[in-house]
Length: 540
Image (cartoon, rainbow, N blue to C red; front, side, top):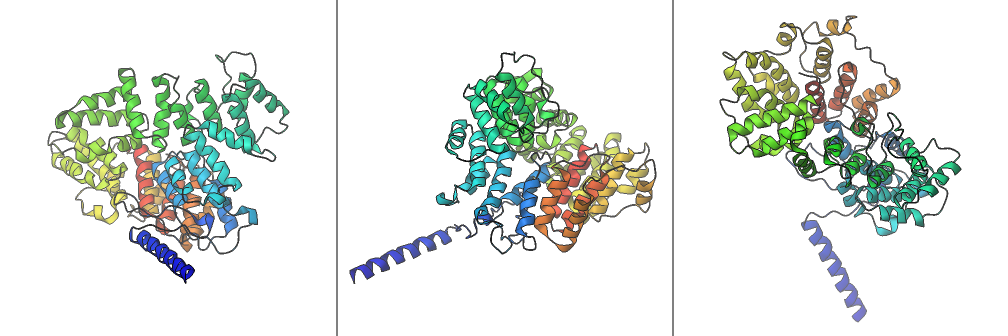
């Protein structure tokens, strides 16, 4: 009886714990390890979470192929948001066992590796915290933990995991071994290991160059930087350790996490770190507070830093409006307006619309449209409309802003008593044909009204984009997946086919295909945000 009572007490206690957890909104991890993600969070300013059944008509093999093909770098803010939602959603996976018994957890590991490379360490930590400890030894999960240790500033933990590992080395583990030898001041051993490696094609070229040069007696002053080579996480760890940043590193095919590591290199001057810090912050891999600190540290010697410092010194709304517009214009000239929209979002939301702020209204409106609260742009548009009779600049910009508003809000913006697409296209001086093509393609992809001659314009020999589609089958599959409502496939293929980049002038057909597919799949928020980013960045 005593045992029975103890058992009953334990059962009651367990039931109480479960009920308490349910009452507090806690959720138990799914039985399928590969389905693990983060519970949805209610955020009125964020895009809606992806549906849990987004992979219902996709095989596990196809899903695994998609995860392997995801871009390492996602500079586009809307696509970056979509990627994070796709990688963190706790979704029902297609029925059936893993491809191989040892593959249980491989899909989760691939998602965590992508998040770690993109620089989303908090999401990696939050998901790993939900994985049962006995399951953390799966190969892909170990790789994700190694990358996370590197990106969180704990390279000794990453190297310890590598030391404990047994088995043959592939390109990933060989890169980790070389990086660990280099940061442990064992450069000769790293160079010797590199020479012993018969097939070096799987190694990051930048890491190979570092091992070869650091293991020799040659000076670091004239490093032969490989042109156009990506900055992997292990190579970024080594660069940071030696206080090195490649020339124009921010323009390379990097990873958000790699940029963030270089931005925090303690022995590199702040002015040299600032461009990679902006690249990391644009990708959401660096806290905005760190970028703010770097701007203040660099100060007057840099255009954007000087504008940032001037804005911080402005204390009254009239001065803040002028300083904010200057900072936004400085960012726009560098192609970083989406970053500035994030950095200055609190001020953009709080700043009053002043009657004398007509010269600044256009750039502030565009920054608000790119941010999390685009509807706050409406009072600034109204300010420009009231000033249009006397202000030529406001009058000229209204058609462009009406186009952007229509892309942002659809039919709601049609209530604006402002000329739209046809007036803009026909008012001299004629807009750039590449920009017109982007605008027409975005309107068509979102099924917004087009002038009757739009496709005649696009078909004219002088206006054709000349785009080539290396993966034509992939684009056709994107369209088929969208028409069938396969949300997961549309999200993954949009990231893969765009390579994480915002369509530029000359890539109108890409923008059209992406916006149309995203819209048909129910991801209209991403479609409209991508169209806005593309067209504002193109100069509208």
